[in-house]
Every structure is written in structure tokens, then in C-alpha cells.
Amino acid sequence: MSTPISKSKLRKAMRARRRELAAACPDAAQRAADHLPLDQLPAFGCFSGYQPQGAELDPGPLLRRLASTGAVLALPSADRADGPLNFRVWNGRDALVPDSFGVPAPPPTAPLVRPDLIVCPLVAFDGSGLRLGQGGGHYDRTIEALRASGSVFVLGLAYAGQQVEAIAAEAHDQRLDAILTESGYMAVSKD
Image (cartoon, rainbow, N blue to C red; front, side, top):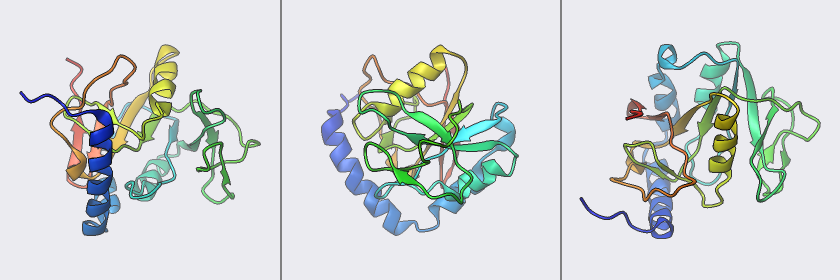
């Protein structure tokens, strides 16, 4: 088995790959949403999505599908650079405001909630459920804190071409529970 390349090198290569995939697969977001097996998800009353940045796969079709269950939609908000993300209710119509990183988020007046299901963006993923994020550790810190206080199901959303053989695991890395791509749904084994 080959040794995983450094996260910084992999991140750079996969960002370029993701841009290529976005251009080549303009219908990938809808195809991914169509593959979601709602009956395989744990019960959820609140879920979190994200606002796509750069060439991240647009979660819009998936969020609409999840919202059709009657669950509450929330979006992440970074209030501090070194802390976990907060989740605030968003109805899909209210204006978003830049959080501390300039990412569109619900305003600070929106109610805080704890999602049962997180739709998580990523740069790359492997078959064991490891994800490579943007490099700040925000989702890892957030997922770790949520898992310490109860259960949360984390669904990575990506292009199938973002899968790599292996990502070098670090102690703080939090594994995904499943990955959804335009090619299908992959539950991650807990073994």
C-alpha cells in the first residue's frame, strides 16, 4: 500500500481536480440529491448544510430534499477562528451575512440549533470516511464537540472524482458516516 501524500500537497491537487469536475459535471448536485436514500439515514429533526465556496458541490438540491421531510435547516457560522462552528436556523429566504471568515451565514440574531445531520463539504475523501477539508479544522472541532454531547450523522457531499486511495489520519480527524456523490451513496463501515 502506498503512503498517503501530505495533506497540503493533496489539498492543492484536489482543489484543481474539483474545479475540473465542476466544469465537467454541471448536473452533479441534482444527481447526488437523487441518490440519497432517506430511509438509510438516522432520524433527524434539524440538519445543517453549507453555502458552496469555489468549486464545492452545490448542496442546494440535497438541502431541498432534506427540507421536504419537515426538518429544520441550519447553516454553519464561524464566530471565532479557533472555535467550533455554530449552527443557526435559515429559512432559505432571509439574507445571509458574512461570518468571521467572510462565508455567507445566517445573521447572529438567527436562533442557534444543534443539528442531528450535517452535510459537510470537502476537498477529498477516502473509503474509510476520512475527509480532507480546507485546512482550518473547523468541521473536525465542531463534529468532535457535537459527538461528545450526543449523536450526529455526518454526510460528506462531493464529486465521485474527489475520492482518493488514502488520507493521512491525524488524531483530531473526525470520520464521515457516509459520502454522497453524483454516482451514489456510500455508508462508511465503523469497523
